Image (cartoon, rainbow, N blue to C red):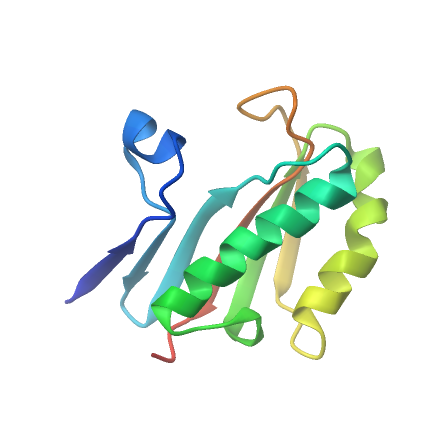
Length: 120
């Protein structure tokens, strides 16, 4: 089995020992991803941008995402992200789960993790 590891160059990757995405067994597994910004919407857009770049490097796209998990410290903020997420996944919505939990740093308001079919 061939495995391809994709790094985004983020500071946490070498510190913690992970990569942004792994292509294996016909799937692309994208690590939980946070984005910068002042609002949950800003962070959601930024995280999706990082995820989109990893998917593209892997030869996939949002249309290939089959599973997504959203992690938020405050579930009450999730609804503010719905239009952004709907735009990102469009006519190809994945199976989804939202979990309320603490994140690695209190400044983060959303973390997004996806699994996609590898088309590349």
